[in-house]
Length: 335
Image (cartoon, rainbow, N blue to C red; front, side):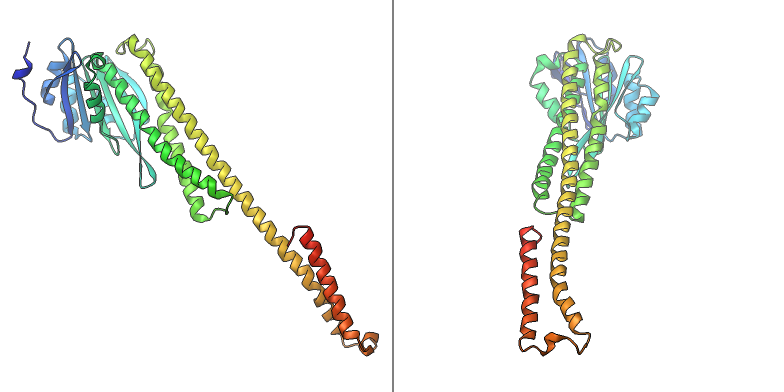
């Protein structure tokens, strides 16, 4: 058997974030892609390769080491795949969507995972948090990492799902601000556009997360011998996290829908109040207008024209009617 002290780190390759081999949960060495197949074939060893937007040539080199299926490689080369799990012989191919909030918008990336006896390969496309933190965390827990490649698969999927929560928390903060303002003033065009964007981003996040429930269900079934039965509870735990994310997304979408409806009702209420005020003042102003119209018809036989106090009397009547209408509208809450 090779000795750790005799191994040298492999030179870095473009697109390769990490390429390491583990034995009993401990990193044995950093290796080159061309050594991966040999190490994966050794009992008790697991090769963990991390790739970032690899070229077709790099994927072909990885394929040659683990005899990966052509269709899986084709999917990994072209992102924008739906989250899924495919079985190709003794290897599993898994697609998961990642999410990050960038400049106020949810931006999605993809992770493609190849899992087989003695190896796991992660291929990242688009915005995504590096899995280096996952690697570093579990390297400090060799007893967990010693469970094998299916544990590494669990660790990555769990990390992807956990990273949905910070996105939702930031959206929730913005949703609460919208909810606080909705009863203060009706939404303007900019507010409505932002609300629409948030609802659409939440729907896209739901579509990215929910299919992972089916992926994890299959990972806990007996139809996949690549996954040890001891790992089934861990994948069920990931499923619980996904369902929590799903419930939170639906809750936030409902709050945004209620906020929009409340804003519409507030706007309608304000419009009704304005209409009542205008109608009230129109009724009040109609009184002097009517009197002025009557006295503007130039009839000579109008008794009050010859009365000494006719003009003040008419003004008094006009003022009295206007004040009565004002009091009445004020009492009814129209003014």
